[in-house]
Image (tube, rainbow, N blue to C red):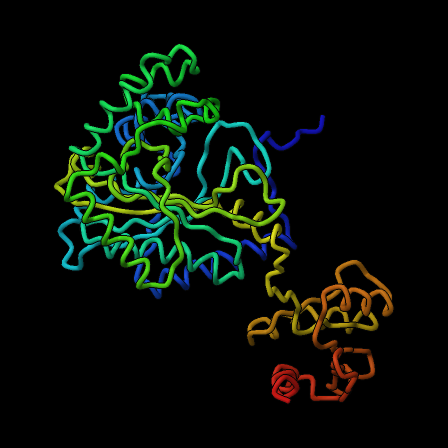
Length: 424
């Protein structure tokens, strides 16, 4: 019986995985420049972590988490997002006591959500995110957005749109909450069941509903910007001023609501405006989450971060027709003529690899013509041909596949000869 891959997952095969590696290396390079250090957290956590941090009214918690009970009857959940785990680790490992503050971290790993698979969206997906914890300076908000924007720009994407909003502080959100409840209450029966339950728990989440986004009351809903107190207004104005100083174009969208309960103050999304990208244009989202460390048992340590899906990033590259500059070539292919020569290439191949070359030989007992074809398929820069006569004379013929130049060298000096060839 053939067993197929689970729905919503994918095999990333050779030929494609190199694109992932290229992107991952670019991300790590940018994080190094911005001074964000990598953190790796468990792939599953106690379910309570996500209930307390992400919020029990979110789609992630109510519909999308992969939750199971282990043999000790503990409820565990495959991580659906990265921030909760990073903040849990920040608190548990007392990183708030480190001399260097704020603590700037990045993660790159698999997340799991049970949602309907579609283009660029999977049930198991790879997410890159950063968290800067320990500063309430609006300049760090701008830096986080700049890092996210730099990832896309450095890969050649140009059809981008950064959208920002302020969700305000606790006082501002309470005032906005009352206004939203008064706005939606008279007609809440016209909305989906999720929105009806959100009215009392978190009415701002109604604005994020995918089912009722075209309802007329959505467009006329009170804007959070109308309810920002003076401190929240000044904070948001500073963030915008810093984005301008960084020459990052942006738009303010008062209806932007991030889908997680822990956000406050700055919220943002980066979208693709590439033709044919699809109805869901969001590439990346993030925001500030002051109060989350306290919720998870730590001291006050305001934070901000973002998360981006690598699958969505790859889809955006495809939509803009961008080919990554990936060169998959090997340095040398060993062609052997005769049994003794074939036996000798086993050790010779290992010597080349130890010397730092990517090298390969035939394992299917091909004829000479077949071995040369194999070298072409692997895009070998050089072919080294060893026959019985050459073996007796301790010689080997080296041919450049690019120029056609060929010369005979001492068999013991093949690695040095390849280096000389490459230096021309």
